[in-house]
Length: 364
Image (tube, rainbow, N blue to C red; front, side):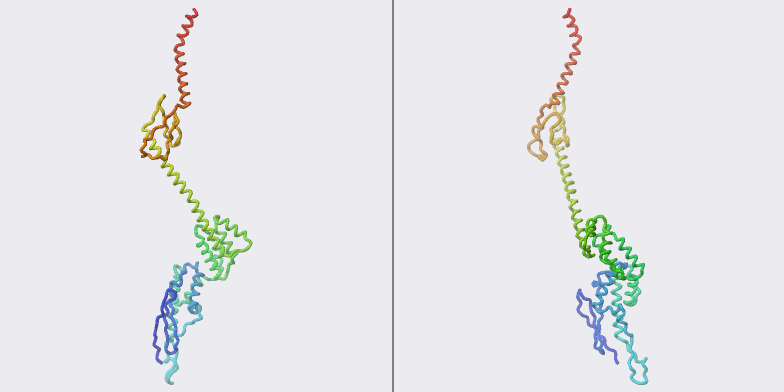
């Protein structure tokens, strides 16, 4: 029997389906296919085993769809490499009539394509586990024994991680995704956690920022699912971000207004001083003006303003600014009276001997 000629045709490829290579045999008239899995069909990469449950789920669903799961679980066994043909004559033995089995070659090629898909979907420490594997089933079993073993030590470690979860500086999305990975790994080793326990552990790790929401959820009569809690936490996170944004706006506005007022005050002070030229002072008839920003708009010391200066008055206005006309104040009048009385008393003391002599002469 002559060996069958092998012909190959390629099916049209698209972004949603990998290229499929068809191979057939003339003696059986049966078509068998080789399916190469595209890396874009496995978006979740396995790293350090924390997401093994999610990675395994996507891989199983993809292989089940292509009817290739038997390569991993052992249901599709490897065919023999050769098969014996009956002797033509009595002089020939069975060992002399062996023919290579084309199904073995096809199975081996498809298995290596699956092994390649497993290796490229692993990163870091997970990739080193499957590096020396020769079959896809061997690599699959190594990953399961490493990340999905049902030992008591692994179960206690996962439970401890679930108990000590903390939001810290993470976002709600990252926080809930970490808890979901722990729950999936516990379910993978046969220790499922119900929604009630998962919700309690989630609320305990939120911190004081989410205390009002956590108290309201604990006070509910009806239980809440893990998915519903996730939605409520996302809404509360968005609410906190909006409140923080509102608190930041008045502070910026106040600082801007304060700087603007300081600029106006400094500009007015310089303009006022430049127009005055110099300070005027004197005991009588002269007026002393106080150019102080704290006394802005008030009357200068020693008089009252009849024409108020406006801060929004332009310094380049054509009309030149004139100092206000001042009138004597009651405090200055009192000071003049005090000086007059002091001078009269000095004159009286100086004339006291003369007056005393005059009185004696009159008496004589």
